[in-house]
View (cartoon, rainbow, N blue to C red):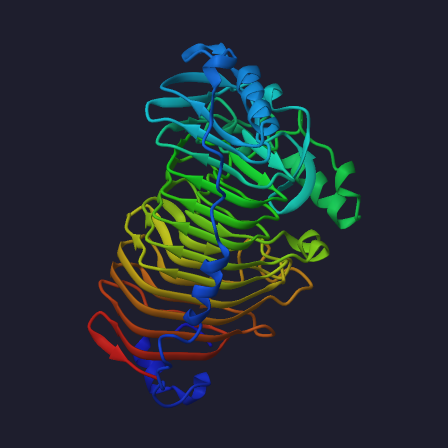
Length: 465
């Protein structure tokens, strides 16, 4: 399919591969899986005992180094069989925090954990994924690996202290502290790509100091029974919340305000059974981005992100509101999102899917309903096979079975901006009972099979087919 507006699409329906009015399926189709998913997602429970970090030497004056005291409190809590590590009111300066099993790190109202700006405070290297590729790199600001039953809770603040003088210039953007001739991530990023292509073992892909690959903020790895609830997160080096290879994950009630490069809000990466709810996002990149590894490395691991429920969230600034990809080579399936509000002239896309001929992979069985979109800058629904490398690659990405119902939008450039490949079309995209106002450009619909519309209104005109 080439560029057409909806008038032309309706007139030439047979030529586009769909005919007749959509026989609307019952609303429970797909959604009837959600109860079973939610029944498996249970936040961890902790013994009712506190380990106050000030009793281990932490001082909330914003000046004293509290790293060792926080680590000691976590170790004591873990050794006692679990409980709550309590940060009381005050400003506590710290380096990397490594959580242990059965520990709830509780940031009280009025408390701030303020993280050092010196990258050496995030050594030694730890196992991670960087942009979807396994390697050894800086520790996340709050990291765990192989630890079950962990939590970060409370009404306090996590402040990464990142800005256009610290961490963010490593992206290499001239509008944020970097200028030609200064070091940035490009050399190490290319080296990591090359190691992945050559199947260098991940533990031998060593970066860290001198490589300029930024860590993420909160990064539980290879764990289960995880809760991240209530805290405010500001000024992150890269992704804010990035569980990797985890299951039974609850992310609830976060307030994320961080506008640096690649400052995604919540990015589950190759995770199973995830609930994201009641969060507010104001970000420098995608608000939520579901991932599953990049290119050959993602296919090598072969672990999808699946069984993910998103509800009652609010998206302000960002590149995409609800995003899948682009690092999704291991596959993404069974995603359910409902009752979210998306509204900002600085939010580019509302419902975003991104892949290309290097990523490959499959995105399937995605269900969105009851979305209220105010003003956005570009597309209400974007499915983009031409992201980054676009068609330059050997893979044929699969995007299929996308069901979107009961979505309204007050202002956007495009209603649909959907571009598959001629040899890999988008399949089975359905929209029902949607009302899109003040849409300024004709839709872009290319290489789509099984586009079905029922009671879809664009600028007051109804389309069914």
